[in-house]
Each structure stands twice: as structure tokens, then as C-alpha cells.
Image (cartoon, rainbow, N blue to C red; front, side):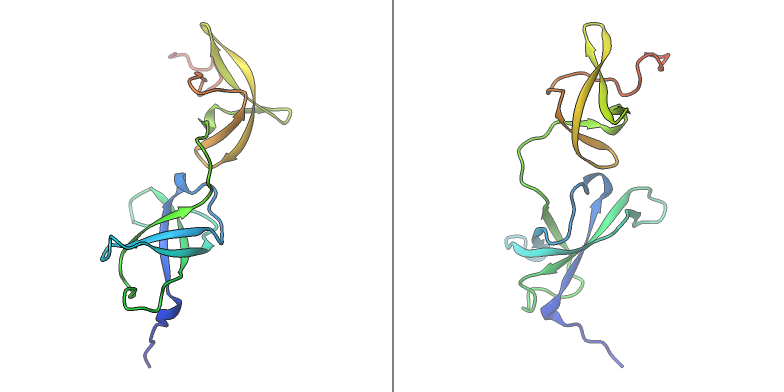
Length: 160
């Protein structure tokens, strides 16, 4: 018995860094470039996103989400199993966002706040948040670019 792959229904397996995986979802558009043909761009669509991140190399703690992409132009001689590629997943089109480290965001009575540096001290500043991942939180309002915020509750760190 032998298995012959169906080249007209090829898929690519991508690995996305855990900290860059914010907003990944099924049906998002993908631009693909084969290492063998760097001047050509191909299109695809996200078919599946793994439910959790995992390491892909023994002894390396860096975690990745596995993403399966259906290739629109499969079925020609360009795509063959085992070829390496690079991909850009078009998660969301937006202008620049203001992000804060997740450890700087505090919650009390259902409201989010940070400790904002004003003068020589830190004061509570209510904020509203948007999308987040394990590392960063989108700040929708309450802060502006250049504001200095504390990464922990002021007064808890004895070393400044």
C-alpha cells in the first residue's frame, strides 16, 4: 500500500510565536512566499488554529501556535510537499495601537487601572482595554503615548 498526496488540496503548516498570536482565527487571509520562488506571492486562508501554544523543539521553552493554511493555488508544479515557505497572516487592518505590559494592568471592582507617573509619584489612572494576549494589553483610553506607568504596585518594590 502507498499513499499519494492530493496536490490540489495542499495545506501549509505554520508556527506563530505565542506572543505574536493575538487575534488569530479561522478564515483569515494569508500571503505565502515559497523559499524556492521568493519573487512570487501566493494566497491562502487559515483553516485551523491550535487551541494552545506548545514548544516545537526539545529543550527550547519558546512556544508557538500551530496554524493550518489552505493554499488557493495548489495543484500546480510549484507546490510540492516538504517545500519551505514564509507567510503573513492578515489578522486585522488597523492603525497603530497603544499597548501596555499585562503585568501593569490592575483590576478592582470590574474596572481596569494602571499606576501613572505624575510628577514624582504614581497615581491610579482608570483605563479601558481592548484585545490582549499573554504579554500585552491594548489600551483604548486613559493613557497616551509617552506616559510612564508602573509595572507593579508602587511601594511594593523596595529596590525602586
